Length: 250
Length: 323
Image (cartoon, rainbow over all chains, first blue to last red; front, top):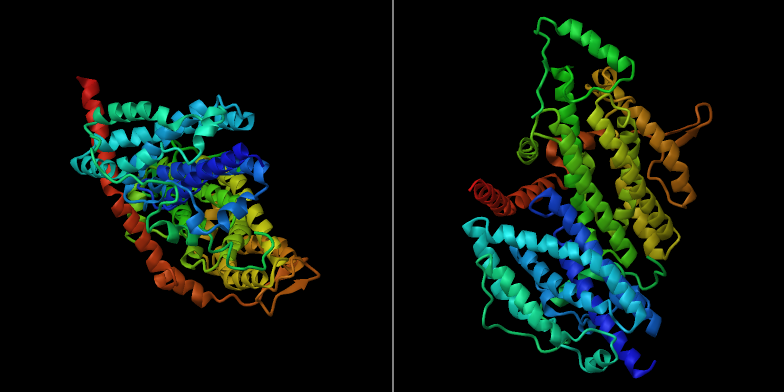
């Protein structure tokens, strides 16, 4: 594998890890949502995110031959390269919806650009994923709006979630080491160039709901950085797959 | 709101209308929401449909926990889709019951206060991943037998909901069977796991069809009005005849020493069912009764502020629209 493909494989792993971990957090709501309709919706979101991870890992498999199930269900927690935003505990409904909004907006912008990728398999995949993601963003925005403009309590919970989560959204726009070469080859969008649009759109939407972006907060420095919440998430996720070393198939 | 045409026996025209109603059922016509119906028919339907809806909702929990632990992309996606279907079934069953003049809030209140029942099967724990497969194959297998029968039900909205539900349950049944067959031929630990799950779920599954016909007080009336078209024992027999040979073929042992094949009738005959346990679990003393209901209450309580926010937001939008 040449170095550009190796970088691309690493980028695909990062993209997939975000989706897998987020799907796991979303799944924690299935059968625990505040209304039955949201049990349905959140199960759907989780399936989509997981499906996206699968798409990225199949692209990666074409480059390095690694089986997506091995990649996710047998990889050590320290090898995960997801952003911290997606591994934070699910919190309350406002926390989940604000996180979803912040992530979906990022994904929308990224996928919109990635449709023009010079790596055709990625361009095709991005076009498919983008269609689903538009619904996700709509769903999350609608919820953030209802909660921000609902009761005093729901507004306060939404504001608190945003205060905590916003700095972590910044991490989504940090390129990986060597990502510049992928950008230069036209394989992936330039994250740094996407940030101003992201910030402007989020600020505009949220301010309109009486929500304000915090000035300060901790921004994780690299994709190797994690919180104490990742290990138990991964261990639980892999508990069946790893339970029987002799099992050939699940 | 549906206009209720309540048929109480003390109504002067009750007898005449009842005859007309029963004649319609005999002709295979469906009863629709605005039609005249005996109050008891309505009451039985609300009881059954809401119990059915609650079963879907409570039934999300035992399997839902395993979404987080599903061992591959494929199994995780399937289980997510399955639990999502169950929420969907709950939703349209609540809607079907609403056509009889009861609200979802009233039904939920009855569930959370413990007045309304849900399927007893969900008062058992899911101890291993194999339980998810066994539930899909056996529990959903029994559910399909029951639901296929209810798809013939005389009440239109219930019957139509069941047609759709059965189509989805068939997928649940298939994926459960596929998983169990794979593990039954798998590693030593996988085989043990799946046998253990079968041992634990076998009797509760047979009991799921309901008590013997001789002990089922509602059955005669439900049959007469076409709400049900088969008895509990008939459904149980259909289930056995289909599943016993398949389980044996898979190399699994069925935990019933008295189980035998009857050449004359072509039926598989089960041994004595532990009904004492059944009645205990129905009475609230099953391993998970308290936990399941408390979980539902907690979810309801934790979601209260969200529902309040939705209402407040709705009022605000209405007020804005009026300006």
